[in-house]
Length: 117
Image (tube, rainbow, N blue to C red):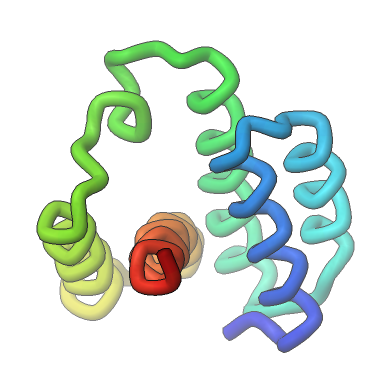
């Protein structure tokens, strides 16, 4: 759903988020907010998820899924499958589709990084 330019900015966000460069991730998030991709409600859900990822990463709160989840390859494949299943089968709201698509994209990004290492 995202244009090539938006995807590139999303990758920059993920890179900075996972490297714990939160100021850079926040700047990338601001750039993403200005991009046009998907319908408005989908984009709002997607950006909302990215905001939550940034807040969760900054806080380090172990109650948050991002901070307590196992990110080994097997677990990430399971998460990706579950997020994609939710988007395909269980959601009618474009906002929710955007939200879970962002999570799925994060997991896919991490899987791609694991393959490169």
